[in-house]
Length: 217
Image (tube, rainbow, N blue to C red; front, top):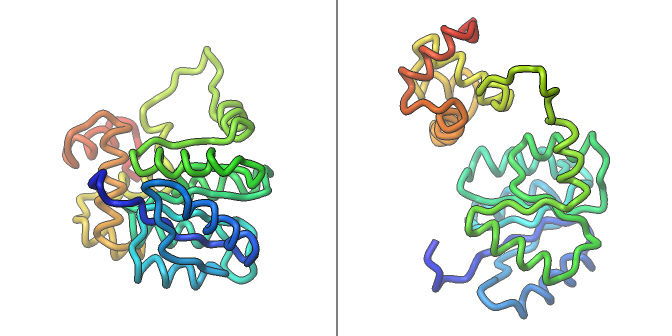
């Protein structure tokens, strides 16, 4: 993204006053442009497809399609987009699923306007921002006992593990996409992530890793 271009932001929140407030505040921030507002998940998907935002500010609890499913769908259709969750909720049953769905950053609605603007700029640079309480919860959840030896594949998401198994079975990107009901572009997105996590350079090395570690079945 060229630095001279503003960061294009889409707001997805079912509370009109929240959207109005965010749009007004972000409209005064240099280098940030609010390009659309959606009052529900379905509308958020439609506007994301139409406007192709750089960053989406996503509410979690909405009628119909919630923020978790909306985030998952946006990431499948627009893997280059960054979703920042902006919510009042810190409970595990909402926080972990939306992060697994692809949310890039997680903020509370008690955040200051400057913190939200800074998180948007950070997301555009590829830097995630987590509310301190969220970061603490994540560390506690994923911290492994010192005596337990961890493996690179322990860090793979459920979807990345599915893709790895299909690679080990010799499936092409198109075949993987068809089997998992996702786009080829999304398959490539998952491949890039899992290659990095496993420390391999290509699908052949990934397949060898899977077979050596009993992950091919």
